[in-house]
Length: 126
Image (cartoon, rainbow, N blue to C red; front, side):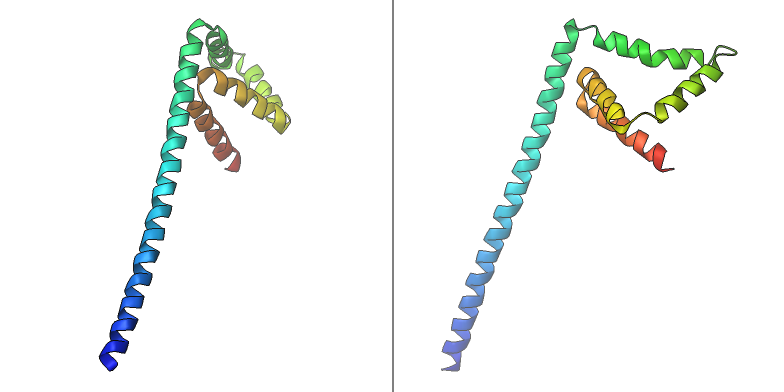
């Protein structure tokens, strides 16, 4: 009698554990698929942006625009204007900063822009 009860409990527990493991495995596989799909989407977007930028002048314009303060910083007397300009930009509304970030993202690629925004945020936090 006791053997029958122990076997029934053991079988029930085993079945329950198998079901739980199957659910956990299904969840893990679904999460992996979502992450893979997301990574593929980002890669596709970057590839499309790279293809489209071949006929665009935006990259050159933005590179020149971002280079101006860099060059001016090395010209005696101009560093005052560079610092003043960045102080003014630092006071710009958040929506403007995000708009510029989107423009840069569209030109140079999403991943680079996200890295730029993260670096900017960490500088602000310091």
